[in-house]
Length: 154
Image (cartoon, rainbow, N blue to C red):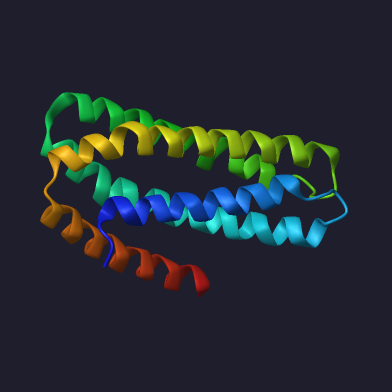
C-alpha cells in the first residue's frame, strides 16, 4: 500500500496526463474531448474529496499554523476549479474554439496546484508525519477513494 503522499502524487500524474491529452486534442475530436473531460472531472472530484476530508486535516493537525494557511490556500484552489473553471468548461461545446482555451486554463491551474503541493506541502508533510502515519492515511484514503469511485459509477 502506498503512503498518502505517494497516492496523491500518483493521482496528480494521472490527471496531468489526461489534461495533456485534452489540451493536445483538436476541435474535431469532440467525442474524445467529452470523454476525457468526464474522466478528468471524476478524478478531480474524488482527489479533492480525499485531500480535504483526510489528508489536509491530518497535515494541519500534525504541525501548526503554517500548514493551516497552506491547506486553506489549497482548498481555495480546489474551489476555483470545482465551482468556476471546471463547470464552465463542462458547459462548453467540445467543438467550440473557446473549449481549447478553457481546457488550457484548467490545465495550468491544476499543474500549478499539484506542483505547489509536491514542492512544498508534501515535503513539509513528510517531516510532520511519520512513515506509519502516512501509511495509515494512505490506507484510509484508498478506502475512501474506492467508495467514491463506486458511487460515481452508480
